[in-house]
Image (cartoon, rainbow, N blue to C red; front, side, top):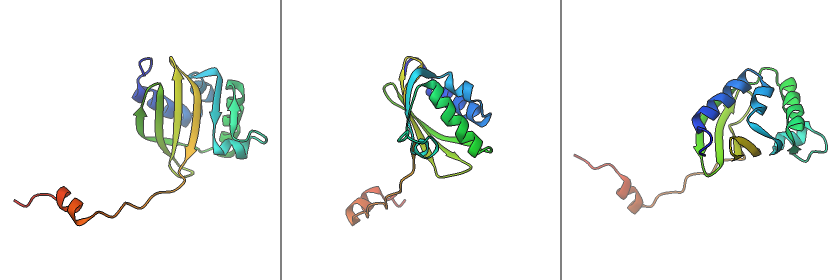
Length: 138
């Protein structure tokens, strides 16, 4: 992630989305970006959830904002990998979600909008593992 600062990118992403500045968000995406999202499958007939190219992505996002005019995002966490950034966020209209973004240089070339599918119950701890993690009594 040498071409971008992950936290600055996420802050800019949140600010532009909350301003409903689609063109601003798109400035960080390559012209031939491929973006997938389960919501795209609902909003863009025939897309099967795959949006190809910046113009199509702009139309998808514009339709999403038309349907949810008061949409607001709040970034909760940012994870950086090798050429990949994950933005964990919540919105005022649904469950927590993540954007998984893959970069070439400073631009997103592949993106995946993901939604929470469920949570797992924590594994029960054995008595030995509870004892190992317990705070010492002083």
